[in-house]
Length: 76
Image 1 (cartoon, rainbow, N blue to C red):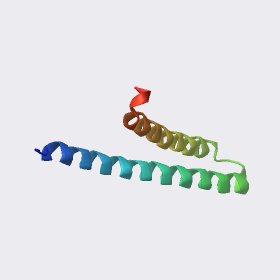
Image 2: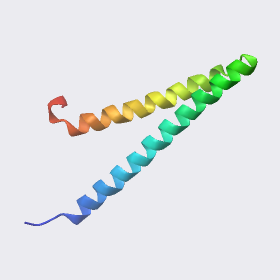
Image 3: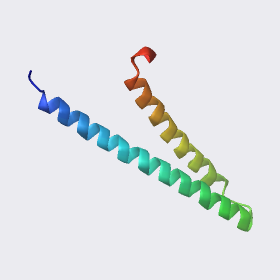
């Protein structure tokens, strides 16, 4: 049996990169929503920050769904 080390390396790099991207999107989304809620309680603003926070959370959710689509063969 021959192992394709280049393909294994590509998979490792891509999966690590996607894990970092997911973590960054999720943490920035949570931070933006939290900051918008504080700003809304303080002076009534923060609508744009709240919308961008929810957009980042939606992107992280789409990233998870895309990963599930790639893994589960019945979805193709």
